Length: 85
View 1 (cartoon, rainbow, N blue to C red):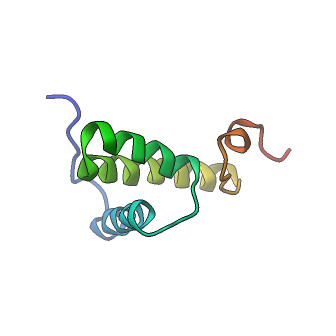
View 2 (cartoon, rainbow, N blue to C red):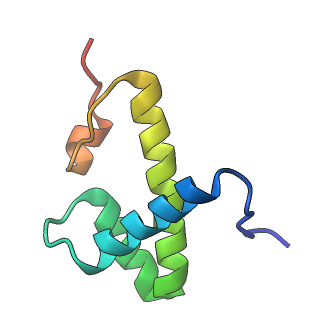
């Protein structure tokens, strides 16, 4: 079956990402492209699946930021523009 989420990786990190995703969806008022994406997904697939998808996506974004040395960009325009040289 495709689309399954594994329990691989550090449990504390997975918990922290899930809590961050939950907070982003439920408590933050500032809209960014990640929250907008997750809210659209929640409307289609449900809030719990959207939260899990958001925590995975946040992990991917954080990894890319760490590897590239870039900062988070709040808008999609900023996110698609090339980073600092």
